[in-house]
Length: 385
Image 1 (cartoon, rainbow, N blue to C red):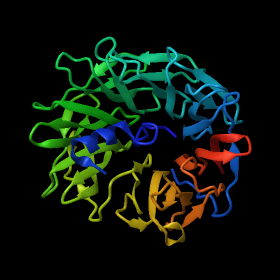
Image 2 (image 1 turned 90 degrees about the horizontal axis):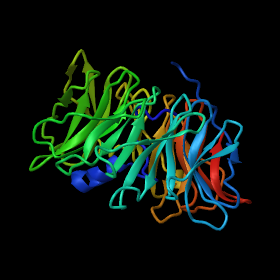
Image 3 (image 1 turned 45 degrees about the vertical axis):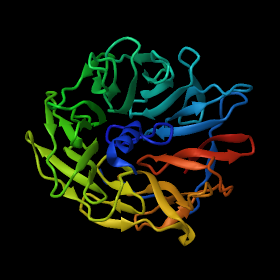
Image 4 (image 1 turned 180 degrees about the vertical axis):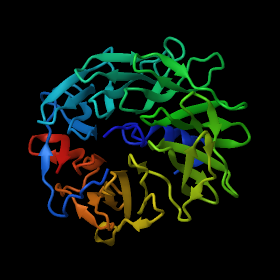
């Protein structure tokens, strides 16, 4: 699925969410596939290695990572819809990850420890035929991290290398040029977290003594600070739909999912969900998920039931049919990979090892799901359908 509208993982947790935690935010009609048994398909790995899937698009192209025999080095990989694996390689021999894929089959990701000094990430993009492009930071050797990509291959995230030494929100054009996005006066760090196919970009920035504030950049690149809710102390925007619905969070005596509507160069005050709801993901049309719940565009909240009434229901992703994937169970590494139907009922996915090595990470509009599971051939990327 295109990552144009939803937050995604930094090998499990989005980089933007990790930064939020550090800066005050710690933790058309689509037919639903009938409930019933899912089949786990072993996508395999590079020879002798282990693998994991991070994302898939609506054409069934999957991206992720794999090791090889006798090595712990990580390679970015792609699987075709017929499950044929392609090695996208490593950058300069460094661990390299494919994080997302759009409808065209263009993938984006990162290499680790490739900045100067070698402690941070560098941003990457692969064309549908596997050609690598390195996405530059604001100066040579500086860090950067990609957060989302639309179906025109435009990537957004953050980059270092500015004269002030801060991280700034950026957009990488389809031709690979880096463009620093403007920030309101007083902002010191920021990140762009989502982009629509219409060119709307959302994210947030930090303001000393104030905290984090949600931002939107219009199609002309102008920055808009999203309005505050009553009694709100912090806000962050994490994704945006094609019709300008911005999904994010506010801190108002706890963390709450929130939505802003952008139209005609203006933004309405946010609609804030009453329930505690730290946002974990959103669909292309703006359906949001948080621990134990799904929030539809109509305002309806559906409880995501716990499997066997044990532990917590932790979603990872949701599609526009309202199908949610994630894990359910105790927080001791034995949670079970599950999917929830429209009514919020959990269904266990095949692989009953109850291991942290088994998880589901993404779902496309056809209801196919990817992640990682244990198979007779080893710990490999899994496709459930």
